[in-house]
Length: 222
Ligand code: CA
Image (cartoon, rainbow, N blue to C red):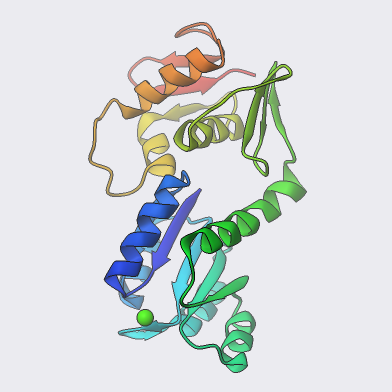
């Protein structure tokens, strides 16, 4: 999933970015309302982790503006204040949940999982292609009756390909959705993960279920 973290505390922002990336999300980090608005203009997010007190504005106002602009991303609000009025204000502005600072990362991780699970459970309980099944809520992949151990990145890749079955998905699209806007690592990272997925799922090679479309990307054939 694609996540935008809006947090001006550098240390906390870095912790959130690293932790959410380790959970398998593609994470962008903004430290001001202005920077967040720029990201929201060009990217589509599944979730926004939004600090209440920002140097150039207020998280509640940004949340209300996002909703007015039609953004459907889930919003998890972070507040240093424990006042009831802040929580009510945040929820009124369209936030889906809030967390009071200080918190431990596993608590935020659990809230994020719960928030991202909501639509997955109601819309697509389990994705299925041939013998392969993927449960977005339980974060589990099976081949037949056997659970296949996959890394968070491999899971996200397979999830995206299954959601776009029978379409040619570009490498750059996969990089964008599974890694993040600033990824500058190995350019063959997608191919390496696809090769691992094929091996783990015991799929045949380049013209099998996960087909290589030369020079473009991949297509998952249903
Ligand atoms: Ca702050």
